[in-house]
Image 1 (cartoon, rainbow, N blue to C red):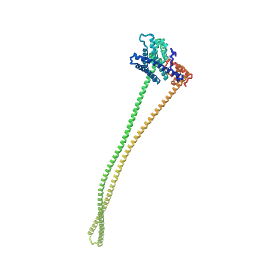
Image 2: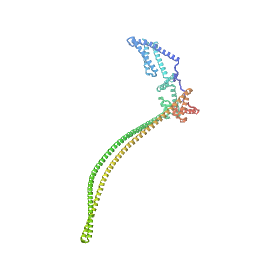
Image 3: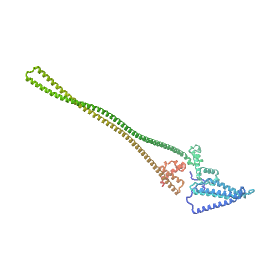
Image 4: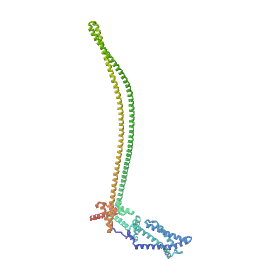
Length: 582
């Protein structure tokens, strides 16, 4: 677009001087304040007399003193509100509505002063001049106060944008168009009159371009191309209106991305909450299982101990009963063995007696045999004293005696064998009693073994509880490691964010130095824009001009697509010529 703007600026200036007031300027300001106070004093003096007299005579105040109090009240009220207005403007907290009561009271003072100078009869020209003269000083004073308030506001708020005034010559030459411009400036907060004119020129030029593009029929243009004309009544520039679809699409995309990010964050938080809940549940379950295992172990140990004690007691009772029974049996057997032993001893004694008797009988038989032999010898010696029949009888009797002695000897042998059998039976009974005692000891050893097995089971239960504690500790260690990894990830993210912030800070510093260099070089607006586009190419497009979208240039500089393309081309030539921001 052309840089020419029809109409001149107001001359008020839109940039405040950074320098402080010099000594001469301070003296000048002091003199102005003194003159304003003198003007206020003169106005109060002139107004007081006329308004007090008029209030007493015409406004039906009871006395002149009451009329004077009325005049003093009005003037003091005006001065108080003016002082408050100036003080709040000085404190950078202006109260805009307080000016209207001041204007109203000043208008009332002007009317009262003019009325006090009104003639009694018909009005002449000089009467109108006299009535107007009574209101000159109050109006002048309010004008000076408004000027002082505006001056204070500019001093204490130098960065506040000032509103340009429209040249009076334009009002005279084009009152209707100028009224439209004034209306749009007030409606949409445009403080610069040249900026408003530039907007109108851009809109007119764009409309003419559309007519040339569509052979005078703008209705063939697309909705996006007609946006500048539709949005102009709402304060949009041509560049802003053309960039609106891209901005809205970008805003919609950002909203969708933000919604997706919130959804993902919600899912992440939900998953984290579920994981934490699951971890808490598992931790609680582990504690419950550990306590249950501990209780079960203690209960099992107690039960095992109780069962072992009961079993041992039962076994001991059983063994005791068996021992008792065995003792009774052994005692009975011992008594039987004792009886058998006594019987055996008796039989042994009887056998010994029988043996001794058999010996005696054998000796007797031997004696009888010897006697028989002697008889035989005697018979032989007798020669035939006895007959053969008597000898045969004697020989048969001797044989019978010999056989009887042999039978007695065999009986004695049997009685000896019976005694030996009784002795063996007694030894066997004693051996049986010893085996019963050994069985009792073996049963006691078996009970001890079962108690040891019970103790081993209790130890196994305690080992399982210790293993559960070890697994819980391992789970806690893994959770601690996960938390440590999460903390490291957060730290890495924070470091990345810090690096990005440092990069942005460095870019902002480069931009600031570039702007200062441009200010020092007093470059034009177009040259500044081209250099800014060059910095954008270096910063966001990796030094490749074609990778920088025109929409970014339009959005950043608020220009048309054609101007953005020209800026990018000139920036590429500038970079090719060796331009680099310091």
